[in-house]
Each structure stands twice: as C-alpha cells, then as structure tokens.
Amino acid sequence: NQVGLRLFLLSCLLAARKLRDNCTLKCCSSTTSQNSKEMDFEDLLAVAADIGNNFVRAHIALVQIELLVFFQDWEAAKSLLIKSGDLRQCFSPFYHSVRYTFLRGLICLKTAQSATAWLDRRKWKKRALESMKLMCTWLKKGNVNVVHPMHLLNAECAVLEENKTDAKEMFKAAAAVAARNGFLQDKALAHELAGMYFAAQGDGYWAKFNMDRAHQSYLDWQAYAKTEDVAEKSKSLLGK
Image 1 (cartoon, one colour):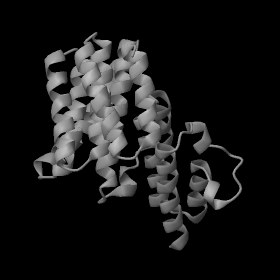
Image 2 (cartoon, rainbow, N blue to C red; image 1 turned 90 degrees about the horizontal axis):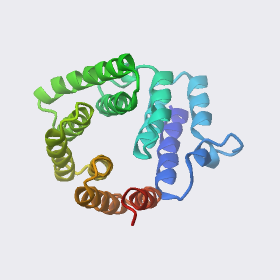
Image 3 (cartoon, rainbow, N blue to C red; image 1 turned 180 degrees about the horizontal axis):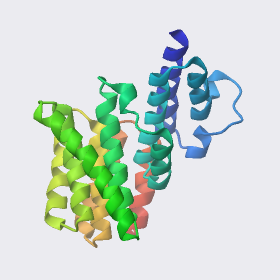
Image 4 (cartoon, one colour; image 1 turned 45 degrees about the horizontal axis):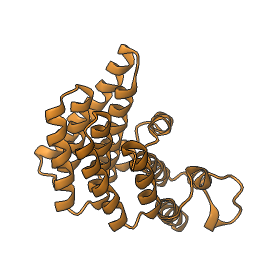
C-alpha cells in the first residue's frame, strides 16, 4: 500500500542522510521529531507495526543494521540483530535475504573476535558459519552477488582463526570482486576492515594502503560522513 511504500522510501532517505551528512547515529534516532521529514527509524518501525507490514518493518531494521555495520558499531549491531529476530522469513525471495544473511554473518564474526569467554566465541562463530553455509548454497546456484560477501566473511573468519595469509588474500579478493560487480560500498567496507586488521597487526604499509582506498571509495559513493569517519580513524590508527 501507499503507506508501506512511503515508509520504505523514508527509511532509505534517512539512511542516505546519515551517510552523507556529518551527524551522529543519535541524530537518526532522535524521538523529538514531529513531521514525516524528520521521522527516525523507531517512528518508522512503529508505523510499520501499526499497519501490519512485516516486509517494511524488516526492511527498516535491515537498513538500521547496515548503517551500524558501516559505522563499525558492532555492539549496537549485535543488539539490534538479536532484537529483530531472523528477518529472512520476511524477505524471501528478495535480495534483502542475501544482504541480511551477509550482515548477520559479519556481525557474528566480529562479535566472536571480541569475545573474551571461550563459550561466547564458539557460540557466535557457530552462528556465523550458519550464515556462511547458507550463502554457499546460493553461490553454488550461480548467484554472483554472493561472491564478494563470501570473500569478506572468509577474510573475517581467517582473522578469527589468526590465519594472516588467508585474511590478506580474502580481503583483497573481496574488494576486487565488489569493485568489478559494482558494489562500491562493499569495496569500501572491505578496504576499511582490511585496513583496521593490518593496523592491529602493526603492518603500517597495508593499513594505510587499505584505509586510503576505503576513504576514496566512500568518497566515490558520496558517503561524505563516512568519508570523514574513515579519515579520523586513519589518523587514530596510523598517527597521521
């Protein structure tokens, strides 16, 4: 219906504003907004729930999750992932299902990497592998849009397992395939995650190489707020 379509478009516009404008996530979740142009994600979700449109509700949650991933807020992304439940049932047979599965796997891997308890690490790695297994079935069916996300998940899995050689190769492949297939935002994300990994490893050359390319890719994507975020992150990581 028209209300559902309007909510769908408003969530996309809200995400674009967050990526383009120099504002914080708090700006996008302010509850003081009164008109439709300033509605936040929670407002949109409330309306979607009122009209009983589960697809739009799931879409809005997916947009929120994706923003948190791009801005590297893994704890908030994990919380929203848990709160939202499994969104795949709302998306089949749309591409949203592929995107959600990829983001879910990435968040689970990042959560496993930061886990201090062995059981937590194991639990989140298992969830990540479930997402990766599902994506492998789509890959075997010839879905080319799954190739670069799988490379990126394999890279983060290698990071988790402390396999430096595989991590480097998979990050490189993820960025290259994303660029070739026209996923500029994922090329930027792959370079950024690679840059942060190499910085943590004390490899200044590859850290700078990837952060510079992440910065340029986000700039090409016209995600100016994210471009500034990468620039600040580079200064913090590389001391320049």
